[in-house]
Length: 108
Image 1: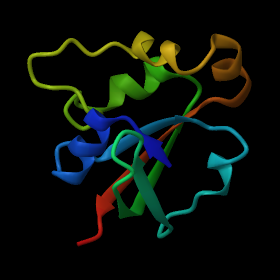
Image 2 (image 1 turned 180 degrees about the horizontal axis):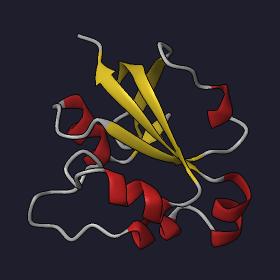
Image 3 (image 1 turned 30 degrees about the vertical axis):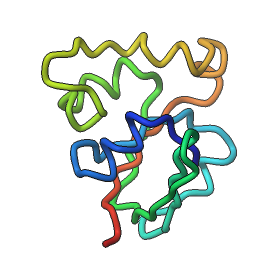
């Protein structure tokens, strides 16, 4: 999976452990125990994570209500809003597929 620089580093350095995605056909193939390679879009660096748990929801609002914003990749002084995800996914796609929080740990 490709990530922008900030979420890439948040996961790599242990601040973020929930990767948020649309629960589309590609994500439905993910299982607990799987290894996912995250690639930084800017630097092309990469690292592997193991899937610990899958959290499925109808929408991002439900997902955001269940997790601390730090686990989702926000800084402590940032305001976290489920509407932030609308820059990546359309409301129609969210309604069609639902969303997933992929709980992960970095493989060292």
